[in-house]
Amino acid sequence: MSVTAIFFSAQTSTFLHPLQKWLNAENDEDEKFWHNELYTLHSHADFSFHIHWPEDIDVLCQLLLAEGLNVPNTCSSFLMKEVWSDEESVWVDLISPTFPLAIATLSDDGMQHIIEHWAQHLTSEDSTNHLYYQDVHKNVSSVLWDLRIVSQDILRYSKDMLLLRIR
Image 1 (cartoon, rainbow, N blue to C red):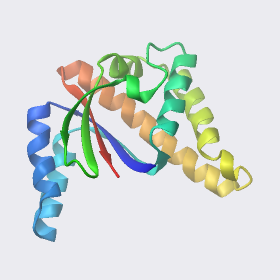
Image 2 (image 1 turned 90 degrees about the horizontal axis):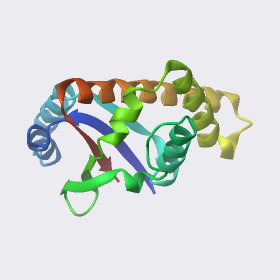
Image 3 (image 1 turned 30 degrees about the horizontal axis):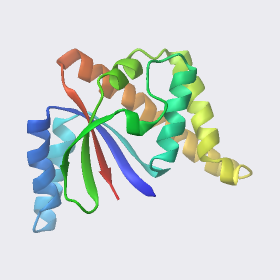
């Protein structure tokens, strides 16, 4: 299943209010306001490029493991609990603290290695299209560096890592 997955550094209590206001906005102006509020208040890593849940994130976990990081081998193992859901198409999950700790300490060389391998995985179905690979590589690079910044923010300010999934 293709999803939008966004990792946030936030306290659950300050995250859910703007999220619910954004999702329940009655007009475009309110929707834009609450969306901006949510994304401005909380650092985030937006995995909204074409990924499949959970398969592609499982591959990312396995790449992180291969780099010697203390992460589970599947994304379902780092989901601690669901903190909110509309029971249809939007979920917010609390992520195990071991995941941001591992990401925050990932070396630059390790990051480059993971970027290369995950981009290759995500483009394996269309490996002959060099422009497509470059686009995916750019997206993967951006989001993984953002994920490290989010993880460092979580450690620095004792916040939670929350995962917003939208189908």
